[in-house]
Length: 295
DNA sequence: CTCACATCCTGGATGC
DNA sequence: TGCATCCAGGATGTGA
Image 1 (cartoon, chains in turn blue, orange, purple):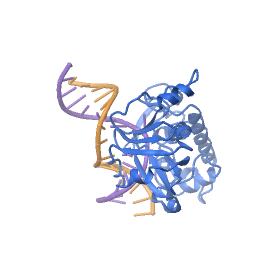
Image 2 (cartoon, rainbow, N blue to C red):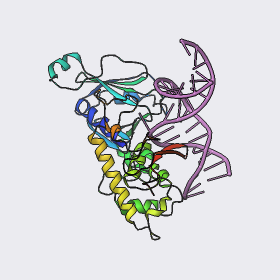
Image 3 (cartoon, rainbow, N blue to C red):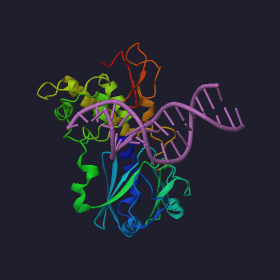
Image 4 (cartoon, protein in one colour):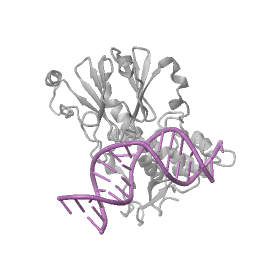
């Protein structure tokens, strides 16, 4: 489930048990994720305190007291779960508190962090498209996984001018351009579909048509940037989207999937016109849109 | 350079 | 029920 809103939701769920706590021990149960973990991965982390847990695009970034930074990506099927120490849970439990993932390390729990506060944080990823990488903080500005990323869509620096410039001259579709992390970082298939619907722009439209000949933004670029910010903001507020029962780190379900206007709604009526939501395939991925509203 | 496409991997849904 | 097929939230490397 992991696009920007889901990763941000995971970050907010993990921060309370990780920030300020020491990683006592790391278990690498399977190190062959998207890329094999470095042989000294666990040893390099053990004993470090997590000074902060941040996010860049779809990467979680833990700042460690050792001088390293731990980059984590959820891929397609990655998730984190918190197993609370029983004593702590009893002590801290309040009525209405969220349900914590219950007790046991299970299949596909590839990486397990044992924290000094008694919490256990597991990284689960059936498809193993996720990844973890340790990088010296001093070298982070030259980290290849980050250096090519476009702007954060919720940041002030992301506006119609920036998006138009990135799309100017692009022959490819708007859909493909928005999925390109170099254009804007953090969108995935769901939120691209939803943002295009909200901006009333066709996913098939050539990307360059949100800019004039000089690369300046037109009204389409303005609408698109606005739609992207609104949909991401709303999704984060809803705790992300829970597809196929995917859960947040604290065990609760996000509910933004109920706000999908087009994603996975092929054949259903459009909420704005009399049309029907259609599914097409663009560069091998499903695109959902309303041909009536989106031009 | 830019773009379309296959590919990594597993599990769930669907169809016969 | 059993088995085959298709599809999936991402990102990269390829080949045209």
